Image 1 (tube, rainbow, N blue to C red):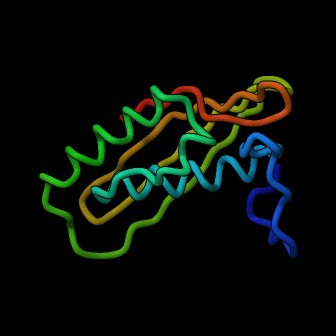
Image 2 (image 1 turned 180 degrees about the horizontal axis):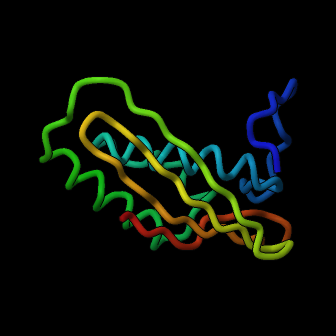
Length: 123
């Protein structure tokens, strides 16, 4: 799956508000993970793309991140994807910032035609 290609038109939303394509769901969830790592609460729209357990973990991580000092400088991130089968993707997100490397394991599953993040582990 090529997540770096540019889409010339926005994807059509699923009637239930979830993403029919895994790349749409993944991009939104990754943006929320990166925001939580900076101490920001996940976007309310994340309920469409993630299970309640994932949202709770991100909120907890954002609260903990607010109490830590943030190092100055740019951060970068990389994604590694593994398609387990046609309904399951496992993703490793590695965020590198000055003086710190963080890794996140994410499992996404397709249910009734839409994708949702079902498990997250912040390492």
